[in-house]
Image (cartoon, rainbow, N blue to C red):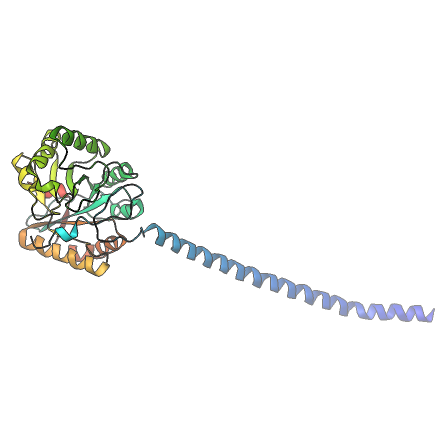
Length: 322
């Protein structure tokens, strides 16, 4: 009897200690769970941030190209420059981009060629708060979408007409070649225009051989005249007669002054854009042609404030033809 009472007293004396130990353990476990949860939450947030940054990088970075002439198609390699070796430099969408001309202000038109193939970068250009013209290749995967989105954002839309180069490389679907007769040329130009129905003008994609042929250019000009479209000579070859022949046909015409991105480098592209701005100041206007490269997009976006400070008015290509 005495032993049972002693055991009960012993259990009662240990109960507060056990309860305290259990409570301490519960608190420790709770703290550990909170810390783990906070760490896990931070890890998730950091991983999400890294994922978003990766998505932006991928979205704005189509494959880097080489400055060689080549075919353009939906599955083609990245945009080839328009015969740079044959074109010496010597000779959320923005609001409506076509601003009211400022009297006496030097005007600069920037054309982005080879559009319809790299929509992420091309949409980057479309979103810029400035007048730009998107020149869309015929019969390519994203051509209709890019033309529609460009027009909706107040940008200009042109047909980038594939024409035969001296190199013999394939300029892509919808090509015009010197071996085609006049009927074949006019039929192909009409078909290419049907692929980019929002186009208000045309410039040549490649074409150093075809644009040097009077017969070919007169056949092309006949379609542009019936559609009342303007023409920009990309001047991919020193022997081009495109500007002369289209002007003779009564078509509003102009020629390219500067290629922006023969070198796919931000600094080099900025230097060319500044050169175009200086030409605009000295001539009153200038036309620069670039391509849907991430480096070109970065350079154009970065220089917009500088161009504005320098009094350069960005306009659509159609504003500089006569």
